[in-house]
Length: 487
Image (cartoon, rainbow, N blue to C red):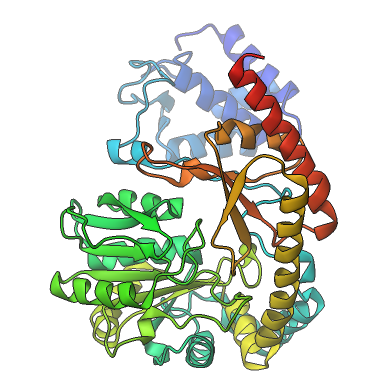
């Protein structure tokens, strides 16, 4: 022993007196373990016998022996016929902890800041659908039915590529709604769009290769590609979408685009540029990732056909998600691979993904196959079309700051550009009033030509709240202008 008997027993008596809701054996174990780790009980010191400890602490000998055996099992004590001895622990008490010394890999430090997720969502949060319009009772019945019929068979991992019934349902929907004719074997279910992007990067690229992404664009793309070790190249966007004709960057291995409703500008990639991009990708052996995140919502005409369906065996991976059409917490997206790529990827998908959320996927398959999905989309188109019109009217009548609306013929948001203003600070101040528009400048990789403005999500914001919210934003803009001018 390296501490007096009295000090040893005082240590254990205090631990037992302050044990709270844990058992006596657990309290004894924690006190001895902590004393060993702290150096109060030094290596090679011998403890009293279990009978002696039990008598002194008025405990059963089984309780004491159980404690000592557990400590010996974990390597804190050595037990033999002579009793228990404190084991020598490597590097015990030879280091100090510095909480400020941890640094992440350099490429992770380049990731954009993650979006703040509020629950419930604040007004004007981009990308959030009308959650209170989702048919929750119907969804609950479908889930209950699936769990009742399938029972514990759904508790295993399942197919790494996702439930077959959901992949079949998605393939049928895409053929009717998006002009994509594919087999269910070409579809992989992912946990949202971000995992789909990460999977594309892992399947198609090597670290250090170039990746073209839209500028401004979806920040999750830069996160996924940077985390995969790729070198993102910012390709500017104009009113016809991705503007790459005269761009002199390194030929990419992967090209990301949201051609049907560019995020956040709302531009539609023209047919001429779509064909040119397909030709470019073939020439340079590059892959196009087509993000079709909310193309189901077009208000001035029919949904725009997907690039993936424009040419046979096009070098396009189609990326879809149910976060915008149903609800974000479903965490279900999917990718559609060209036939040859699907065959090549099949052996490695199981190493990269694990099947899960099986009941939700089966319920979603029924939701689609029974026609509920198509009916929900139709109802949401009517709602969002009306909300967009009302938001345009509120902006025209109550925003006196000069602004321009970009895009805006579909989707769940309107983007307004403003004359030079600190839109980041504007968005921060808006949060104090339960408003969460996104600052447009934050979507740019190249900050020099960045435009300023706000991305206003109207999907989950009632039209009755548009006017007071716009008036509040105008007040904040006026205040920022006065502060900037020194008045």
